[in-house]
Image (tube, rainbow, N blue to C red; front, top):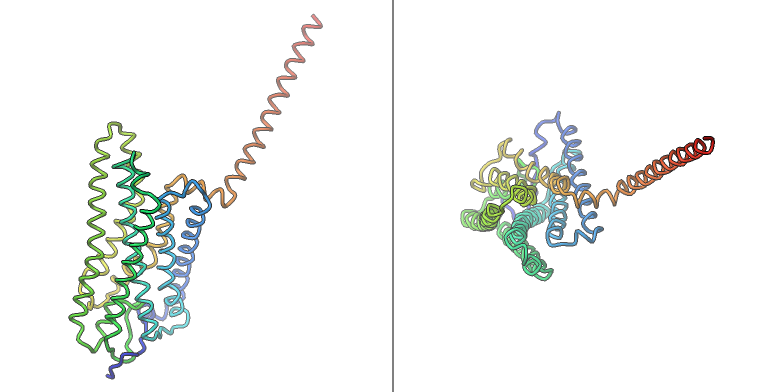
Length: 341
């Protein structure tokens, strides 16, 4: 087979069974639209409510933005492949998709770490929270995260751009991932694979250790709270974030904790779909459904709260008027009885 640095690939991970494309297209389109709707509503709720302009919600808005971009990196091409049964993708498109996928995945990881640091500062040092999480420090934290994510993604893209690949290879995946590309390369990939593993390990394990350390200090601080109600309230603020951390890292390790050039079985492909599409869809709902402030802001934006308030006020006026009428009748009846007597 011919080797070239500018070849085309065919994404065939979801088109092996000709009876399922329509079903998969409908399912993934619904998930993608739900992800767009949920994350856009969360962004709108945080931006429209001045009470949510705090470090925690600022980081959460960045996470919603990253989730929007993350799903848009892979979902449109996947839907196009299912609709047209043509998964052809050029090497430049493949490299660009891999760059943005890595960038937003790394950002997702770093934002979860930033949220853990924010929770640590709020629970461990509540009196100094405003001094610790200033707008300047939040901007530096998020700016540094974006810089690290872009740098790592650029290194990955540059390493892959130096490889040559066999022509017209079918990638058993729904997007361009490290494993299939390295497996179809006709160049020596050992050094580049080792470098990618080191970078991926550092960016995966370091934030995880930071999250574990933050929650260790959080649990120690919660244990010192005397009342059970106070402990429950403190832990309730961490439950949504902790559930997303567990889901994110379990899927990442299940999908990528092996040699980068290992083949993709159907189970691993399912884990990759869950990681790339289902998790970003769940994020806004997990964070908003258990948060009273976000729900209040969403109700205000959608007009639900105002309508309910108008109905309550109207109903209250009717009840007041009815009660006043009854009182007047009772007074008049009593006055008439006394006058007759």
